[in-house]
Every structure is written in C-alpha cells, then in structure tokens.
Image 1 (tube, one colour):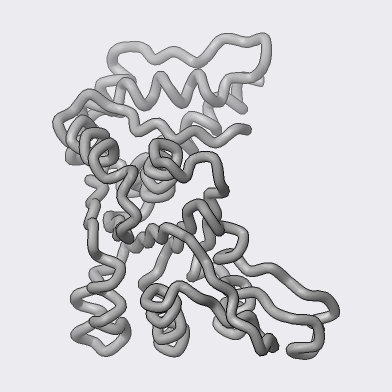
Image 2 (cartoon, helix red, strand yellow; image 1 turned 90 degrees about the vertical axis):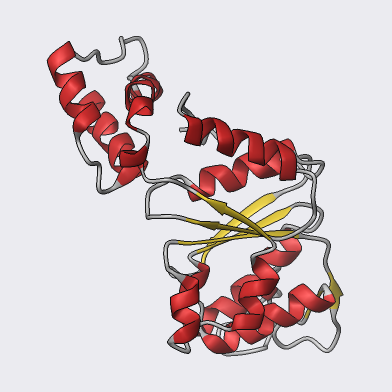
Length: 238
C-alpha cells in the first residue's frame, strides 16, 4: 500500500507542525525529530522531503536500531568488493543513494559510539569513505534524524556524543503523543478506515458510543496503534 506523508488533524498541535514543516522544508540544515514511538516521525520526515527543493531526488530511510552494529557502516557508506568476507560486489550505501535528496536516520539514539564518530565526520566534511575504498565520495544530502530517546539523558549517561547531538539538532521538531491531541482522533480513524478498506468495499464506520470510547482512549502506541487497529478492523470485514 502506498505510503502517505500527510500529517492529519485540525488541532493546534497538528496545525503548528504543518506550519513548521512549510517554514523549514527548503533549508539544508539537519533536523532532529523527537517524540514517543508511533507518533509519526518518519511521516514528518517524508513530508519535509516532499515539500523541499529536494523532492525530485530520493528519500532514503534507514532504521539504525534494526541493523546490526557491524553492518551499519556498510549500509550507510557502502563497501567495495572484497572489503570483508561476503563482500562479493561493490555496494552503494544509503548516503550515496540519497545524493541530492534526503537521508532519514531513524532511531539515531541506538547508534553505537564508534558509528557516531564516523557520522559526525561525514556531517562535517560532506564526504564518505566506503568500506574498503581508497577514495572518498562527496555527498550532497540533507539529513533528518529521529529518536524516541531522551538524547540529553543519553549524553549524560555517556551513550551519545554531545557534539553529534548539536550537529543534528539544528532544527528541532517534536511530535506530540496522540493523547495530547484527542480532537484529531476521529479524523485519523476515518482517514485510516478509508486507507485500509478492501477494494470495492465500504470503509468501516463507527457508532457514536464506540467513537467516543476511542476518542477518550489513551493510545499508548499512538498513531501506529490506531493505524494497526484500523487495518485489523478492515481485515475482519473481508
């Protein structure tokens, strides 16, 4: 199913975020998106890219927590054939794939300290060193990072570099939890009910009592929990 990048809602929080995106979209400065899991950080990153002058180039996401530490360098910077066991061909990394566009580093708070040093160097010098290569590759990439972690607390604990934090946190954006914008819940429910409906069928509808219960629910999993519920309900109608 096609990914959308529409930040939905008429609440003050939603309107403020959309206004902020329009203001900072065409900047090349790095962006740090923070907020609880499931609040739409990747959606905001995509929206930023699509509103920017880089929209004609690639938006390349990577989840730093989902890739083993010993493979992340190759994923980000690429490698050359024979650089390590199993490197049977050259591989283009995510930075090169995003050249001219936007690289989204999700869960940046889970990146190891040694990789943080390498990332900081790339952000400062705008060149990458593919693993096993003797030549640097210049890159033109806007970096958007995101995390659900409290990075200032991670810095105090020695798990995140302060210099990298300030390099990434040039334009800070905070995604509010869904419980702080309950007036947006009915619109979100209807949007995702239509989004997940089966072909040639109607979107699910909510009776007033059930809609009221969903609006007053705390949604600990935020919008991700809501979208999963709409997907489940829609599947049950098949």
